Length: 357
Ligand SMILES: *Cc1c(COP(=O)(O)O)cnc(C)c1O
Image (cartoon, rainbow, N blue to C red; front, side, top):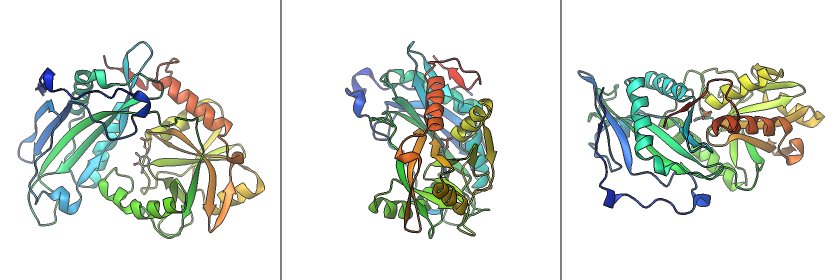
């Protein structure tokens, strides 16, 4: 499919942020966006790049009432040579389509969606920041637009991609976070939608996260919905524990998101000759290991932070300090490895990165 491009007139372009040390996350968006429409009888049509602007939808649009919304999050990185690189982008679009299937939305044509994303980035290429640790965040999204108030899958969808520069996640070194083990609220149950990147999961997580923040925690560590026994994931990150010589992460049982950073970490750790297990890990095992000293490190993984070291974990009112509240060696090594692959500071042995300009 050919992508029609309508550029913003040069006099009407937005001013670019002057200070790359203050980009933050999610407030600054570029001049253009990619959109594509779907109707059941026609399939996908009208892929176009145009000015970043408000979208107009019917108040009865089904996304608003019944939550048919899915999204993705990935980044474009500016290497030292000025080139713009993506990290495992196809995995994001394949996951997007798995999310679509779970909430009965139309699957996108991955080639067109990826082509649209790349052309959009190239059109707005001057927005890709250059300072260390900064990147261009990419948000592919789909909403049900059909106006209809009966509950059923919609027959019309809008797919769009918006992009914007984001700051370095860590400004003053990689500060370990404090996490609160949530033993009352749950994010997702097996058989539910936890493995899809769909809006409702995030709405479901907000209350527990707000309460934990009030108590001084950065994140909530979710336990399984049935028994509140097994560790699932954290906020928008998958979770890893280093117990003895084993690196452990929860299996993809249906209630957790299949993180691309999670997968990258598992491959790298395996290549380093370290034992990595995808297996159920109970909170009791983690706490016991914290108490007897065999819990060496704990960290979250996700596109935003890459590796987020955990320095304290609080369960049933008791605080447990992990690796003396500092970043562990493996966490640091993994962070350096992934960052250097993403920013092309070292050769990418996995074929994960792709230059687009
Ligand atoms: C996006 C997300 C992750 C991390 O996935 P990555 O592909 O590594 O960015 C983990 N958990 C949840 C709930 C998420 O939404």
